[in-house]
Image 1: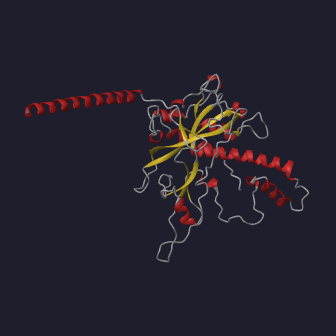
Image 2: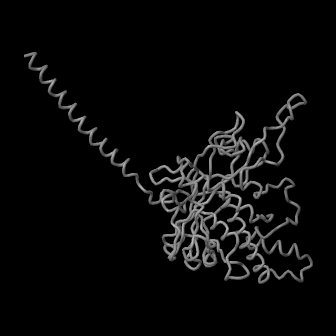
Length: 381
């Protein structure tokens, strides 16, 4: 597989999108219906954990080296599309957010839904930023794994064909991600590059010709489409879909665009069923110096909304705790479990009053009906 090289600036520029997307939902039960229009949402990510509690100090990220990143789930919110200039442009676009947890490396469990039970921080960030950080971190870890496995197991230095030797070594170990080039020439000239679609982008691959296309049928090809990541219906996975608009809000079909992509290209859309991310614990420790944290982790941390109540630090950042209390956490079976969402006391009170009033009114109606029925019986007598 080809390496995915992502720049630091890519993650930084996504901060603006997230800051305008998150809204306060302490009074909402259905997080997917939140409108990102509150001052709290806009200001949420402008605050991050400071050294010694000094608001003017730099963000302290040295401690991140001792933690691992674990995906917790994702969801969508809706906001006004400020770039909708044309009549056909989508006016309400979907903004996608991802939740993750930083767990101590020694206690982070890939098999556990929560990852860890203490000493952790919970964070939320826009999906594009999360994917950029996650995939670059994963690539660094896998690259190191490949080098270590090659050194201790492959013994290809003196082989007649070193490339073929390494290919077979990785294949036998089930480490296909270590193989950069297929030595048997099976690579697709129009290979799908995931890095090109970490955020919504127009599909740049080949498209099929329409049946019976001729010179009078325009360009004779299927319409253009856009590819981008989105949160699966259950919230436990991030997959790719095909869309008809440049905000990746309107699916190309009812199957998440999979059918349209296949009809258009003759190929299955990669990552349309299998999640781009998993629930493994991905270390934030630098591969070469364990006392340093990876840039991919420190950057996504700096831009994320934070809930560090359980981090065990003297100056926790809790600005996003209220918001994240309603975010759903992914389960091992792909089904999400609701977080301890904050309830709306006013709404609950009105629901209670309405329920009691409804019961009393029903009882009074029944009483009147019974009394009228008795009156009819007396009259007939």
